Length: 311
View: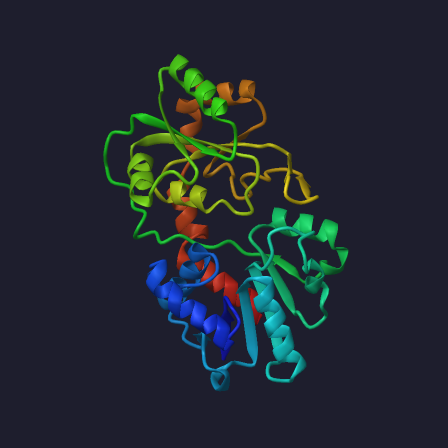
């Protein structure tokens, strides 16, 4: 039996879960990163995998615990293994955000058998900071419900600009460029829209321009692809975080899963303008929804999860 944890099974955390059910109104009261937890469990249902439990009583905990999120949850699982209650620990993809956060050295613990990260890019920079992780890290992307994100036949007249943690003038200037090429821009900003609005504008957009300096996976991009909207993504190569000493450098650190099938990358405004001007040619090679159906549905990703943690 595989036990999935998003928080310790102590009375304190069980009380928090109970209170959250009434205060925050989270669907199914899932813990951890909601999109990750939802995708995993919905995928299990799709592939008819039943040999797991979530938030069990102590007497029903499995010998293999997978910690989806939280360093405190990982510490709790390590204590269970130390006491001989469980035999195997796997963790991720949301155990810890940065490799220099408090308690990050717990990832070095030899009693952790496997660590999942949301993308290879994410795994690589953790290994750069913590070389001891090499050999027991894997990339795992969470999935999309392809039946919830279904494009509806309609005229696509916009180009969506998705602005995530960048200065507003970026979007304003790119709007100007789009208008110069006879496209109609529509800007949304991270954290200021609801899912229905997002799906509605994706369905009416020829493509999306994503302005994000750093994303470990970019689930919002997969949602766009599921709506058959290709994405042209800023490739920053470097990002620093004021709250920590961490910096990330490399390729595609803002969009780890963008490829020729679902979109393109740009390093500069000049390159972006070139891609925009070539849209009619480039769109022939873009098949973003097909990409999601092949690689990023809930069922595909949950099966990949099982292959990694049980393999």
